[in-house]
Length: 140
Ligand code: RB5
Image 1 (cartoon, rainbow, N blue to C red):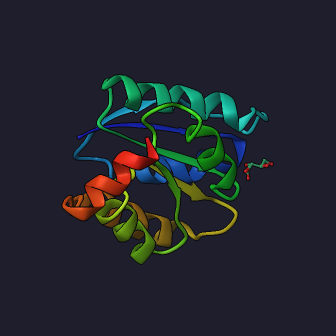
Image 2: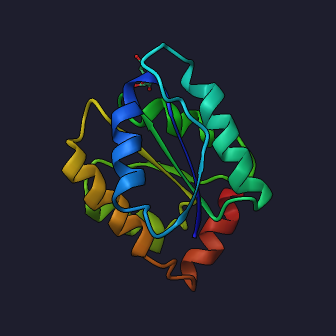
């Protein structure tokens, strides 16, 4: 898959860890940031969301301190369904029921090992379709 990824200053190490592990067999479009210099998470979220909404990327992953700000910001882009997840079951269900196309992780909430498991689960989980397709359509 083509995965657009981005983070703010809180998520630099987690972003890199994901790129080197669960994303190594994917095509990664990296929108930064790569330094501890503070950046505003909505700016990064907007870029990753645009990549997914335009079809340049199949899905997106965003990392900030909590994952929450990134999810709020990314969800403002039409066509983006962003989910902040702190454990794998939510990651599975946001794919199966909500067809989430952007995963948001919190580097100050989840350990890197947990974030990898969440991302792996999210990448592998399909959308169930059926009755969920009608509901997802209504989100739009
Ligand atoms: C940055 O300090 C922090 O506010 C940001 O990473 C994120 O947690 C916002 O939701």
